[in-house]
Length: 285
Image (tube, rainbow, N blue to C red):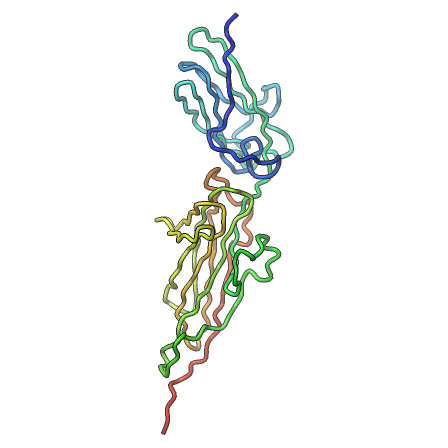
């Protein structure tokens, strides 16, 4: 009797201990997430991966539900990336099968892993936080924030003078955060403005380490962890002019599992700087 080939089903990425139907994980992935599945066997053997909708392994699932990437074979380690598409069912399990066939005798062994995708809970948000003293206290539930956008008067210069061109600057802040993951994340912000032709000075800060973040060549900001980011705009005041600054987010992604955002709401916030009086210099006669 030939010796049975022993398998160990592992996930190549490091997993957190997560409860069922909570954070995304390889057995209960968010829709849109990509996980890397692997088995170890014997060097020289061949490995075949399929996903079925039945426990018997008869009904192979089409690409509309899942996308199987290109398998990688490294000695006796076979791995494959699988994306659980938005069309995948969240009410019934899928079954991931791998078949190993020996090179010399064509004997086989199989392993099967039940996988039940869950609704995507990963999302990113932005809110005007200019008047918030501690951004950490701003609710992570955007529906509980009194106003995603707001307005304020321009801030007077710290040193006042009789120069009518000395109007100072106003600092505007935004909080950008995510929910539904414990991983690093990324997003692409776009800043648009009216009332001025001067681009404001923008600084991104990762809150947990107070580290400044620099957008890459495509304008994407990537965080080192799961905490929120703070955007600070330094804006030159213009007398008798209303200025508006809108931050819009796109391309939100869980960096580890490439999960996209689940909704398109709460991705834009505007701060309005109301017009300050155009006061002349003090004269006399």
